[in-house]
Image (cartoon, rainbow, N blue to C red; front, side, top):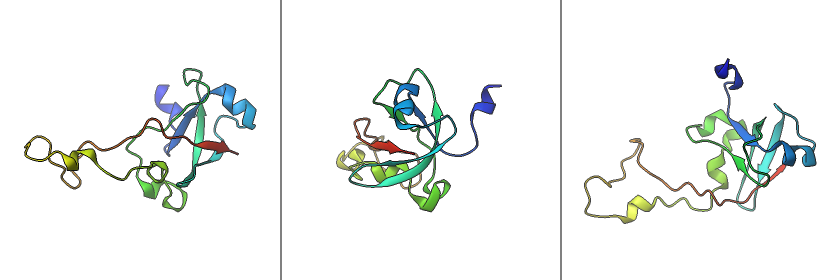
Length: 113
């Protein structure tokens, strides 16, 4: 039953309170944007998400989003902080190796239907 909650495409989790204010229903496609970029994504309404917050979990590739515009285009820093840590074997950024990277939880966005 739990697996049926995932619709096989990128989803954004959103507070039902915020969704009501914007006329958004569960399963709607919305535009998420800020002054850096935008994306289109499907919404999953869930009460545990606080009003004023949206959540998009990692691992969605840009090709899975309309026009390739993913959540990564909304983040203000393309810099991987691990690039600045030199001389440590266990902290070496390697292309396509799942190394740590910047995920800015404080990124401000707006959502519209």
